[in-house]
Image (cartoon, rainbow, N blue to C red; front, side, top):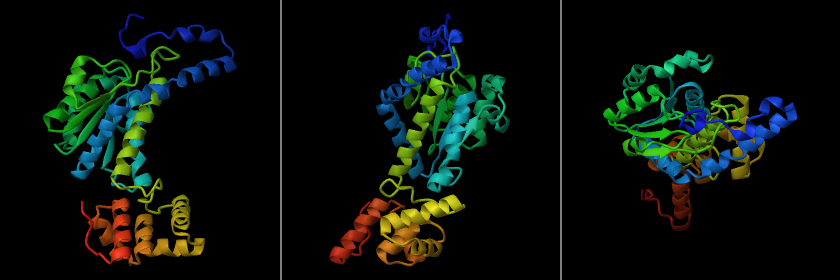
Length: 312
């Protein structure tokens, strides 16, 4: 295959895959998948830089916006869609943009990735600006829709990043604030980047949003406390978090969660600081929702009687 892109090259380890049994095919695929985490780990510094850029965007009231086509676009939309139920964020805070629009989520719209003008228009439609961080996702690194979207985003003042699974060209490194390139190698089936490249992409996106949300104060320890009870599963999870962290019985945890309007973080602050719902919400607002800062203030206040607001 005369193609310089790593994702489009033939994999010698799967060259005879069409002659293998089902179990042998599974083994080949699994062996290849075993290298994905290593490829992602090699990009740890770049991923951390992307986390810092996302965090800066959130703190400035901006957004993290993913842009992609095909599998890359669908993975971006998926990661963005998980933020509101997991961390209680506004649905606009993390967004996924896919070439071809909503229809492309459930049915392939391969030609949409070639419409560069649509990528630029998507940034204008979302009023991208200086407080936003836009990450383009393209396994091969060549998708016109993605490049045009990032170019327009930069013109509008946004910070930009690029996620790909082939060695990045020098122009990419010069153009964007961060470039993440986990080199997962040729796919088991040549060019099928929904495989290793797709797995690496999902790992990177999950890491960026998870780390950014942790640093933004959306967790307490390693518990997702900034969630709003909207279904039985989340009701049960919320009650269990309160039972575990506060040492409460199930009935009291359920009662406390109800008093907090179904918001776990508020319930935690109410019980720890002896406040009502309004007081707990005000305390959280003073520390911008960061539980660790509030815990420090609470401990200091109990030991010294100091009721001053914590330093920021």
